[in-house]
Length: 451
Image (cartoon, rainbow, N blue to C red; front, side):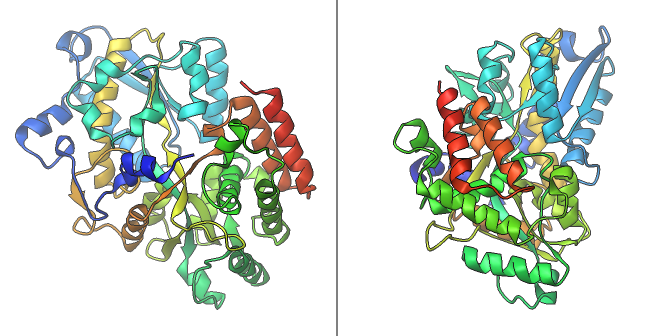
């Protein structure tokens, strides 16, 4: 659960001003700040142009060359390698689910890459407990890096006073919609209630338009959508926390109602045929190529949408209320995936030096690539003056209305329970199941894996 007070403390995902954001260390400041942002930490002996040839493996989740994040990571790697000829950054690029699976295998043999991707809170805790990740406090104190992050955000990546990963974003989940397809279907306004949402799904289906893009081969996508419904049927944030605290069980009416509503979408034909065989990247491309009317996904996709063929045709709105319950200004919250360093890296200092450079320059480069909405770091620049799209500014304005919300299921529950949940929701795409049975499956898994 993330309540209103905590959300405000973590800067209301703080594009605190939707159009004017500030960070002196990441561009546009004085010569001193620019120099700090572009100089890696450490001394010449460890990361300068001389010395032994070193390869740093950088596992990442930016596989799509059309996206701004892909362009950002490649640009920064090339820049660093040019300044440090003795260092090669080897990119191991995977989609999200592939990376999660590969990292688990690597972790089991204690062969975590020099830099890898972890997710906040409950998802990263097992890696920390196993001693696989290096504390980054020392590196955060170099070049003012720690101060570039939104207040409170690093708490999601911290255990026992140590920060173990640096987030690439801080997002909310929204419903993107294709204005042209809405017009073609004769729909004149975005849905504000689930009944209106479902009615629109049926209209799009009748007209041969895919209502909702998704790639459920990567099972987190369906879970994230489902959790929007649960946030509403519960009347607000905190359902999973109440389960963990023993105040509720998964057999609570709010959970069963959420399963019912999710299955109504499936039965109405809301999703692409064969959704469970489509990965998240391909699912997103269904929307970005103009084939789907809506896409329920995190605000991190704003820049990618603006770089696609539907640029200029897309708007965004909050997930609707359900049976009169829920506040549209409470969102599913997504502190981003994060960069972590292997505690067993053979080149620990050089890896930290590179990551310091990379994260200092990441927000500036993302801003240049029109992908600053939803960053976890403060950014120097005016979105409108920089030519950001109406969509980017619209999403930024949604950030400023956030009252609170919930984290994803797999960022809240322990991994064993989360896996049962992901599989259970994925199964709903292929067969109709009694909602009470789905709830019971969840409760049984929770009780069996209670920590």
